[in-house]
Amino acid sequence: MKTSLSTAAIARSAAPIGRPVPGATARRGLAAAPRAALPDLAGQVSPDSHEPIGAQIFRALRQAIFIGQMVPGTPLSEKEVAEMFHVSRQPVREAFIKLAEAGVLQVLPQRGTFVRKISPRRVREGRFIREAIETAVARKAAESITDDQLLELGENLRDQRLAAKVNDTARFLALDEAFHYSIAQSIDCIAAWETIQDIKAQMDRVRYLSLPEVSPLDLLIRQHAKIVSALRAHDPLAAEQAMRAHLREILVSLGPVAARHPDWFDADEPERVSLCT
Image (cartoon, helix red, strand yellow):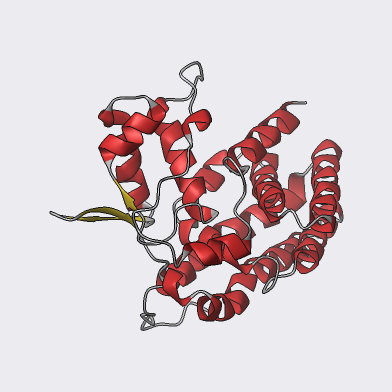
């Protein structure tokens, strides 16, 4: 089935690179020397792939940053990364530019390129924009979703429960990505999902740090199940409300996560108009 293949692809792209870094390992990594060796990500890039090399490098580095394999302050050089992937510097430069635009890399003239800390303000801004898009997607999906698409979401929920049972947070996050992608796909609007990829970059980093202590997996699965129930009932308002409640979970977890991992976060810059209501 076409939708299943696409969902599998998005799950693979969100899967952990190399060995997943458990929360404890990531926390220990904060105390490590900034010049620690980069994780070996070479296996994540294939010259035989239909996807451009620069895009593959971008995805590999982005995911490594999200799961804590490269903590804030980690220095990156075009030369070192190009050597790791056995490519020229050009695709690496392209990946660095995209990562900087997504807010996860910082380029300091005469000093170098570094993994950025998380900006609480950008997390809130990303959540605000993502909510506007995904609640509209959920409302539309409730009107048109098919039985086959609902079956796919049900299978995804089953796999989420299996991942939660063994506390596989990396697998859970991959399935979470696939879940939201499938809903956008159900209304034939992949552009909606693509639009929020960079917008939600800071959110994704917080989500990884929040699991499972701050945001229990069972809670997130229950929220996903409410979304599916509303879609199955073809109730646009309920679907919109369930999606909104789910995406606002990040506002609950942001403060506790920042308190647990202060070295990962920039000082907060409250917005003039609150985006949390």
